[in-house]
Length: 263
Image (cartoon, rainbow, N blue to C red; front, top):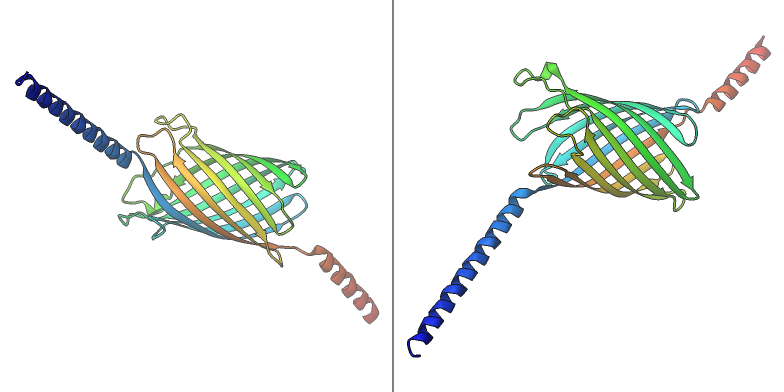
């Protein structure tokens, strides 16, 4: 009995040591996998735009945007987006747009690119609540003139589907929520959704046709080994230009009367 007791104590000690070492190894592996499996970044997107109604059916606009990355310490891209939309009725509208982008990389190899898109958006109002569903086809390519040191690249075509809900609290304040999925159409390496965006924010209608949008967005890659997650704060300003044709017609009539009196 005197010899068995120290032996049992030794076996228990060895077993405890092995369990502790295994637990420590598993913990280190989990921390390592967690650290390498995801990449996150805090970004800020700032935009300025001008919109106008050409007629009851057609509208046009242009927007300039600056996107910052690496915890909003470095410019990621500068974008210029002109576009035009056609309103079929109060439920449906179509739009076409173009984007010029200048992208800045950390290794000072900068590129310019172009993109076009075609949109179809349906909407339905339920009192103060508005439900929107937008589907977009887009295709982009790099600028051949500014990529002499690298091969020209054509970006995959995408189908983007976005569901949005907006609630009009009053004429000045309208919070909203959006969810969007990105589906590559001609990428042989990726046939499933490769990104999503979830957004909450609000539109503030100011006086004299000025509008400010503020939002918080989470953007994450899907179906990839090391997905990147971006946390984005965005602020956008837009000015709505009104083409006052009525005043112009009244002025023309007044001028005609004045000319008649002169004659």
